[in-house]
Every structure is written in C-alpha cells, then in structure tokens.
Amino acid sequence: MMIAFRRLAAVLVLPAVLALPAYVADPSPAAAQAVQAPDPLRAVLQESKDKNRGVAIHANGTTINAVVVAVDDRYVIAKSQQSSRIVIRIDRIDGVSSSF
Image (tube, rainbow, N blue to C red; front, side):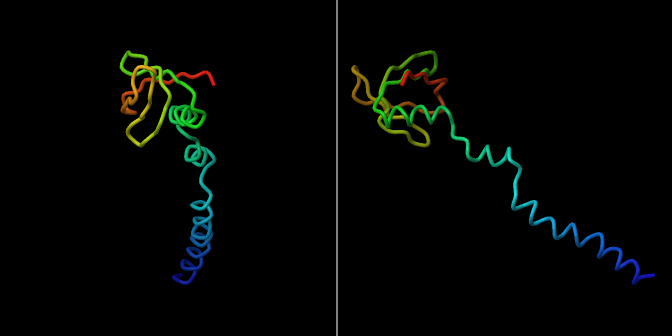
C-alpha cells in the first residue's frame, strides 16, 4: 500500500515541480509590460531636456513655463526667461504639458 501511495504522489507532484520553473521564468504579459512602460511624466520631462524645448509644468495650482535642464529621481531642474534655475520636486508635480 505504501509503495502505491509513493508512486501516486510521484506521478502527481513531479509534473507540478517541473512546471514551476517555467511559470516563474515566463511572467504574465501584463507584468512584463508594467516593468517596461516608462512613466509618461518623466518621458515628457526627458524629451524636453533632450530637445531643449519648453514645457508647462503644473504644480500645486501654479503653471511654470520652462525648459528642463535635468531630471533626477526626486527633482526636476529647469530654467526659464525669468529664472536661471528652477528646482521642482517631482512628487509635487500635478501634470506636464508640451507641444513638441
């Protein structure tokens, strides 16, 4: 009886154990897309930096028209006609608009 149970357990458990690495190595398409999708806010800021074109940064009810100089993990550094250096925290930005 014990030998039959061991054989049955081996037949049931072995396919599950062999299929587990394939499941882990191949994540769902939604998870893979979430990892590859860039943040749209950072993408517009980076595009402003790369093309040296102006953007309107909407933060805390204020619109700041500027050209992005640098994008950090926490800050955006920009410049405008009125100010040579503007530092904005990214978590305070409500939105960004551009017309490239």
